[in-house]
Amino acid sequence: MKETVLEARRVSYVYRTRHRTVQALNEVSYRFASGTVYAVVGKSGCGKSTLISVLAGLYLPSMGYVLCHGKDTLTLDRTLHRRHDVAVIYQNYNLFPLMTVMENVLYPLRLQQKKKKEARALAERTLRSVGLSPDYYNRLPAMLSGGEQQRVAVARAVAGGQKIILADEPTGNLDEENSRNVMEMLKRLAHEEDYCVIVVTHDPQVAAESDAVIRMSSGRIVGE
Image 1 (cartoon, rainbow, N blue to C red):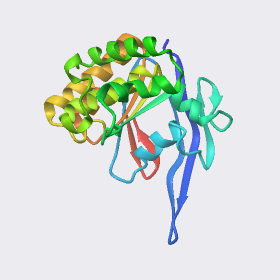
Image 2: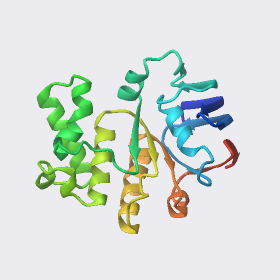
Image 3: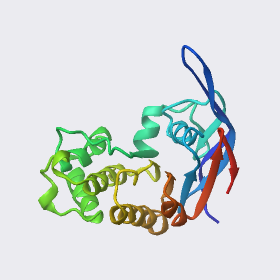
Image 4: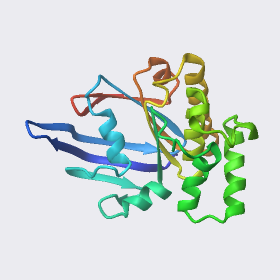
C-alpha cells in the first residue's frame, strides 16, 4: 500500500482585496501518496493554483490543516519545508536569469549546505537524467528553448532531494512534444523513484497520462 505523504484536511483559504473577499478553497480534503502522479483540473479561478501554494507552505490555510509526513505545516519551519520536503515547478520556469544552467541546479544544494564536490556531482547526474549534456551547463536560461528551460526547472527540483513535486501548469508554455517529454520525466520520478507528483493542468493529455485526476470547482474537489 502506498504511503500518504501529504494530506489536506478540510482546508479553506480566503484572501481579501480592497474591494472583495474571495474564498479560493472551501474545505478541501485529500490524501496524496508516494509513487503517484496526480492531475488537478478545473476552470480558471477554481482554486487549483491556490491549492498548490497551500500544499507548498507558501500560504497557510485560513481553516483546516495540511500535513506533510504527518506534521502540520502550521507548526513547521515553512522555509525548511520547501527546502527539504516539497519542490515547486512553475509554468514560467522561474530560473535565475543571470545564473547558468549549472548554477541554477546547484542553488538548492547550496542552501542545503552540501559540500561543493558532492553538490556538483549530484547536479551533473540530475541534468543528465533530464537529457541535458555538459554542453548546456554554462548557458544562461535566455539561451535555451522553453522545453530546455523546463528541463532545468525539473532538474533543480529533483536535485534538492524533495520527494514531493508540486507543478503548476508545467507544460503550459510548451509544444506537444516538449509537454510529453516533461510528463514522461515526472511519471518516471513517481513510478521508478517513488516521488509524489501533483500537477495543476488545463491540458487533457497531461490529465490522461496521470494516475489520478482531481476535479475542482469553486474551491472544492467535486470529483476524481
